[in-house]
Image 1 (cartoon, rainbow, N blue to C red):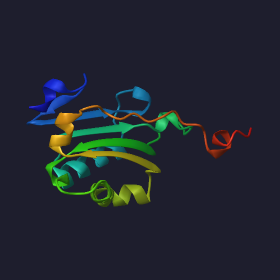
Image 2: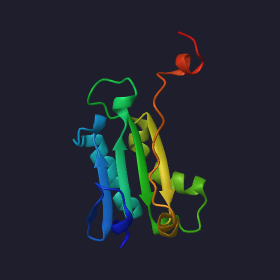
Image 3: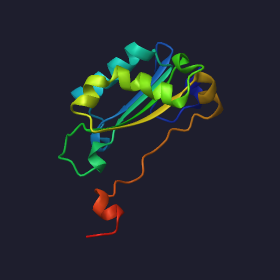
Image 4: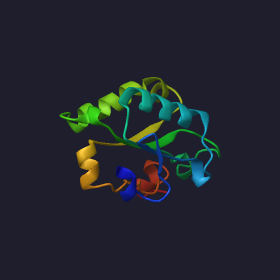
Length: 137
């Protein structure tokens, strides 16, 4: 089973590994995050699923659910390009992406790829919009 090599905090449930991190690391899971988890579980039957609400790092009101990162490990990704994998995730979350979710970072791997590298990606700090990125006040 994969859980022996995973980062602390990942929990094995019925042979699958899941992790949620609420906004600002509070541990609280909001309704949008819960829907994202449910839809990805139903669509992809992942062996590993991590859903992170990263909204707190993007200058939005406290409790917002607008920026997410997901790590999905599924045998459904076998033989698919990264683009095709992302399209599967986008299709599963089409309603959320059309509404409350502003940004979605996706890490989509096959079980074999996960066994080779179970490192979870992290997002860089938010620069607060293109003004800071361009160096203007």
